[in-house]
Image (cartoon, rainbow, N blue to C red; front, side):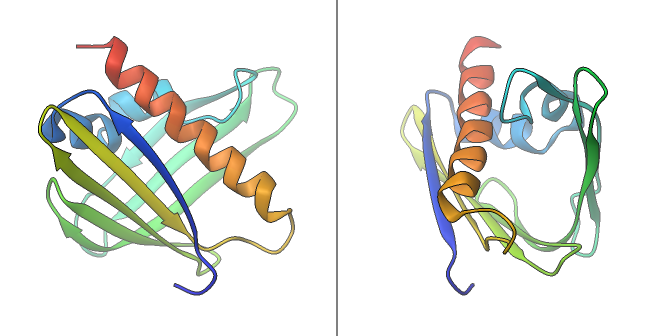
Length: 138
């Protein structure tokens, strides 16, 4: 992946739970947004090579929304997966078992419309929401 951006989170939970909460639509809708004024009202995941990922992202006031769509390229259960977004940018998500914690590493190719720091901060905010969600729900 060229010029990829990398973000991290150390989640205080075992890898199987972290994997499930990251890939299960029931959980995705609870954490997949960068700002509290947004939400993810629906998500669909076919976690197979060639399968689709679809998450609806919307401002809570209804002023804006979009579908985040991708096709899974490779999956190694409880270890990592990669996907390609509809604009052909690549993403990898890695889950490193660190005893009672799991490190989640996301690498993504940035788009050209927004500043790199803004993109990194947005993706990191979503990952931070994920960490908080996993750690507060058992």
